[in-house]
Length: 448
Image 1: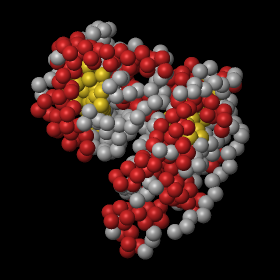
Image 2 (image 1 turned 90 degrees about the vertical axis):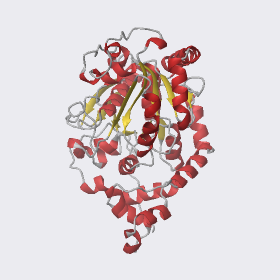
Image 3 (image 1 turned 180 degrees about the vertical axis):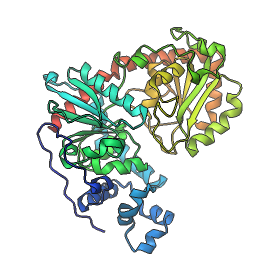
Image 4 (image 1 turned 180 degrees about the horizontal axis):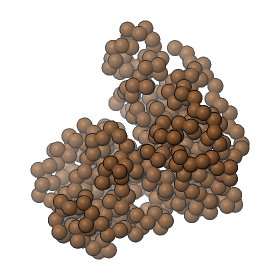
């Protein structure tokens, strides 16, 4: 099936007002141009697996449509899987060998410069009804832009149009344009001039639903370096931006005393009353923690670890929810709570959502910031942080043994102290919010 489409031109003007009504087809990617753009991206990158999709969904054959055409007509709106482990493995193998990836790596080692950053007045938009950690990303993006010399402020979908902005950054477009008042911003004038900050892994339905917006944006930013290389391979202007350390983010820079907070009510007195300013790794009362959303992969391994972790002081929170995590509905949906847990934790587990080995920047960087040691499943290489140097990497079945050694033995604690100190120094010095802000300003300037 051939899709005809034409991506909109990039307009070198100030951000558009959100006064045009959203076209419902824009939200559903049902117009010929939008469906064609998404289909071509999925086909060109190799993300879409025709055979796997047809096997999984028998109604494809009954429809008489090409599987990709069927996915664009039916599957994308139903949240169906569109890829496979084989397709993803092939894509990652090709990406890690590609020139786009090599160029992205080189950029990470060349700090950008920007003339007169004060000329940038940036609105960083986030959904008022989205996940709390997306608001965290937006806050750190804005902090980094300000530390780089620009004027930036965090806005949400309920904000009135602002004529004084020179640039707009939308964090998590799959939330912003489809929840609450975000629908009124889903118009060509605004989307085609904005920088869209993608936060989703490529194999997920949420990433697919964001594609109608990402493919029409002036610039795409992404937390993941390999994802950026894939965007570029498909002809999309993209930049890797990983917001990091900033004194402006008070929840982590100066954690609050939450010793009486209900989330800690079930913990031992030594955990609740721990002095967060205590410098020693060995003094932290929680041996191991995991905080994240439930998935079959995570549930499997956490269940396997239960006998070993029962002998330790463990804090395991694995949420099952079909709705965004917000402070109104979930006591864990708070930056202050994350800081309170991590500041008491020796070791933070990084378990992938599924079989795909993304470097989960947002989880890992919080551990670096709060000086918890990261123990992770094997993951994609990072240009700054290396396994065995800044964090530990281990096969899932051996993770309990490593955790026990690090948390309870003198040799393990000494090694953990060394690793976490090195990770924190590199994080503060080279992975700051300011560095991310400079990279984003330079990319937006080049895209203008």
